[in-house]
Length: 229
Image (cartoon, rainbow, N blue to C red):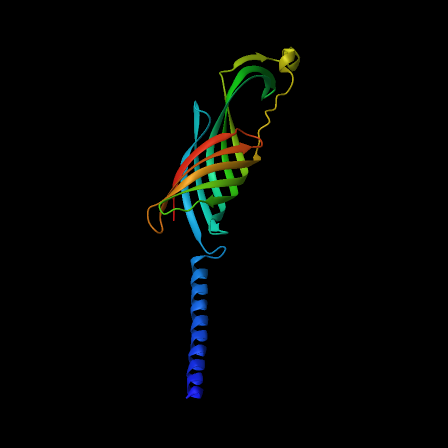
């Protein structure tokens, strides 16, 4: 009788051990499924908004962004965009322009003030986003590095012009050839905050503010909003 009891007890113990292992691995795999691995989730977003250095001159900003998770709350972002920015400035320019027509050559002395510069900026941005996840509204912090391709436009006052038939007759202050140095590329850093509002499982509203420091052009405050999916 004792032998039979021991056999039954041993069989039950083995079954309990096997059942424990099965439950353990089920719980382990379930936990792994709850924590997505690196690069397991991708989102795409489009944004539009405004930027400014001073409230008197407001520009526009557009961004397309792809992001993927590194950790559960940390994301890697790659973005392409376009922004039109303005910088108020004030300086005087004295220059000359040479004209040739058939055998006649003339020189024009020009005097005007540069009052503003406009920048068409085409940035490529690589950055990080840390999201504090909540059920409906999730705030976040962001950091971006950017490489910018730039086209610059000069805004100036009406010019005063005097015409001379030889270079020697130009006033001395106009004889130096004037060259405006305009940046074609630059690098930038942006720091910002934002919030994601969940509309559905696949669709979100995203509101964002960031301040962009730039190596060669105007530094701007930027407010944008968009959708991610």
